[in-house]
Image 1 (cartoon, rainbow, N blue to C red):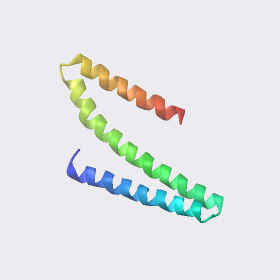
Image 2: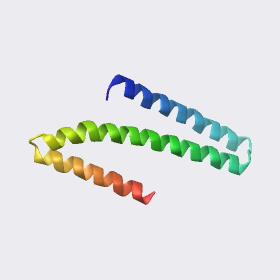
Image 3: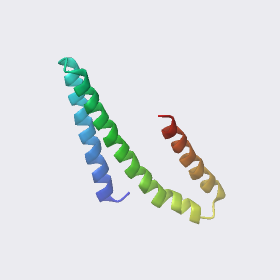
Image 4: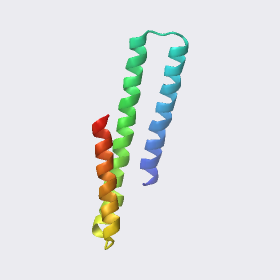
Length: 92
């Protein structure tokens, strides 16, 4: 992953980390439950965005390389990884 994309992912994850700490404080302070749930929903959306960015990179780099390369086991491995990801996200 190039430095710019990596920095963007790291920045987003640090933001998520800060929001999680904020939710912890909200729970500790006894904030209104719906406000906490709304913050958690925002965190989930942010993590989904990061996940999409990483998957995009994986598809354009690792998967593309494996598909174009001569190693059939590498192709099978990356296809299996993708299937696992899609199965896992379909269950959530």
